[in-house]
Image (cartoon, rainbow, N blue to C red):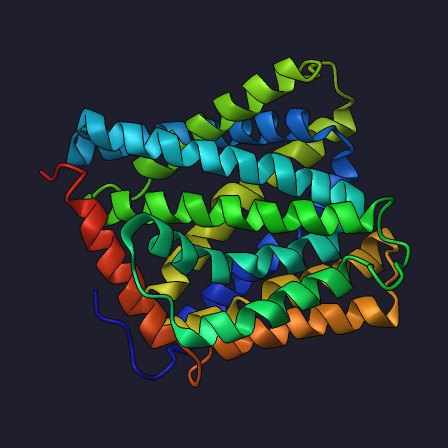
Length: 318
């Protein structure tokens, strides 16, 4: 698919709208007040209410997926489930704003996964950026003093970072599957959601169970979380990013962490110390330098493309 060399205002508007919706997910998790396993399981189940019929319609139009492709999609859901569990705990520990900022470690984690799995060369600028990203995450987590955002800001920052790594693993597998099956846009996501729900369910049962008897307000927030965070936001982001250069799309997606911090302050009353604000700014600025037009977006795109082609040899095509 060709992308425009000059920004398309309509695509940019869709992408910014999707990133803005996604920024609310941490707020919705906090407002729901459910434990991480319970919130993660039900957001998957509720999202499948929409994704299931959508995937069925896609099956009737484009046919089914080979068994191996189904397996890779379900495996990607294991990483997605780990992301949900870790990130939800990070929101409750450190606050919605901090959890969304440190999640940007995925920008570094995705090419590192390509290096570990397929031996792809990591761009030198990413190596230079790693200390800045990690330092920004440490500051945002409150190692030099924490504001009022959550009871365990340092632990939350660590878990949010691990969530970003898990999410990069999901992206790695899901993009490879989707690239090999371009006619199936919804089915891989629906299968990954099934895998995520099963993963979260197993962890939840092992850790004390999944709560079913939830207050009506909690159910309402979980429904909004599932529809906004897993359906609406990613449809808007997917359609918007298709019409933009990778660097432009990456830069516009920075609306997500910035708006998350602002919403955390306005809606949840979260307050940050000057050091935490500096850490958030350092993370966002480093990511902007990596994904912006003057950064390494072109090289990152080539690394991902080569890695996807390598994985395509493991997934059958039609």
